[in-house]
Figure (cartoon, rainbow, N blue to C red):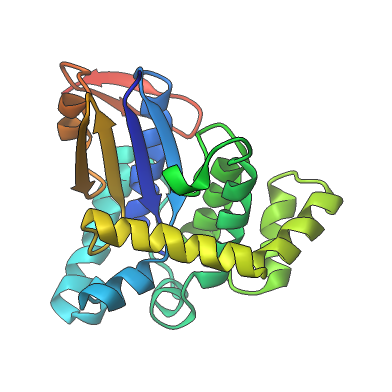
Length: 242
């Protein structure tokens, strides 16, 4: 059985975007089953007594510069803009994460939800929509909290009008709200205090790894040997040895 890596993420987190794109790249190279798990970072922060790094002036200052570095290094179009910190601190990502959870639930057909987080593999609709959400909040500085804006995100993801209407209805359902809560509780049970986290299941062992730059450690855990850095855009990668 191939190793399984569940990547827990929230689109309000820029480092989740790095982890997400890195996972998409390595999913095409490694003999590993990646699955993306929408979770609610604000719920994790509240449950653990943690707080957003942008609330601490020194950490916020560092984060602004660090995002520039990681965006360049990983070639992901992360940009700090006037609306970014308003989105992080005031608007949040609850509606967006519920939308992604509704999409993930559609990927769970035939899967026992009691044995796995509500998730979706790379290459499916969740990947496309999550990326569009990150582009809005962390690249162009647009809103992701209203139904009108979420409809635009879905339209930009080339989804049919019929499916868009269904997803926006499902997003508000009790079952989706419970599923997002369940995913968040699963992250907490693994020891999460923020996002992104990777839950690695391999050879009967279970490990939780926090952070967007831990792929060399994860490669070791899943038996991928010498780590190879994958750089490039969303669809193209340049191989470089680390």
